[in-house]
Length: 303
Image (cartoon, rainbow, N blue to C red; front, side, top):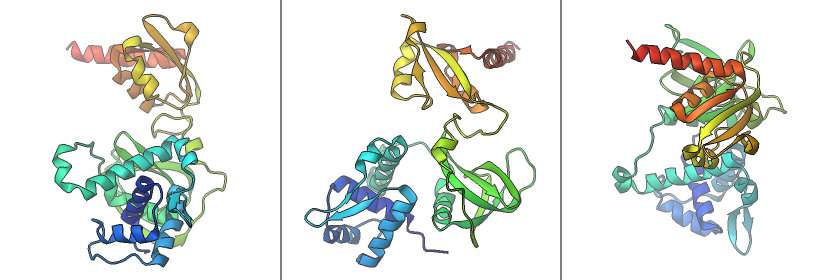
């Protein structure tokens, strides 16, 4: 298996991002004092250039050199217009900051992501080199674990858990696998694999909220009514990329939003988590589904 340099990539992206422009000599000097450099070794130029290639392959972050100014992130405009990669940069920066300032960790509280560090690097590494992985997995709904070869397509973070979208040997359908306690083991194999050239991870998930996928739910227009005291939460952090205000149906008490997505169980749970502040207006079958769930919950608390 190729040596895992994932932490180095994170460190290097953050250093260049924060610096704006930085020379190789300054990068090398910073590396000698980095938390990740246990031996205080210097950074060979060949290794550095390999890191730049890997960073582009994995994160689509392009680091170039200006002879007079030094190294810089060349596609910052693309990153600023890409919510996912912008979030990635911010997350990597925070991760690096926490590792470099361990004495402050008891004053910076984060949400735990189960087992992400254990398997995330191995899967990203396999995706980069297009190597199949052998995973041992035990679903929450099955008594027995199973071991099989999987071909990772992409990774997605949702509700504090990382998920892998993949096919497996002999199966054409795409499935979701969680990188938490359900993922028991991951081993990179020497088997090469490829994914369809037209596959786009963001487009694949564009009709879904969360990670539940499949043909049981068709994308459709969903309208919800939100009490105006909660509207700023929806405006500053939309539930879905398709979110739009419906001004003509809104008033002084409520704001109506519409979405184009599949009303999966993940979306249902999100809507219900807002309690009486959010009401589903349409489609009728989804509204009835929420209504039935609320009635059942009420019955439980009436016992």
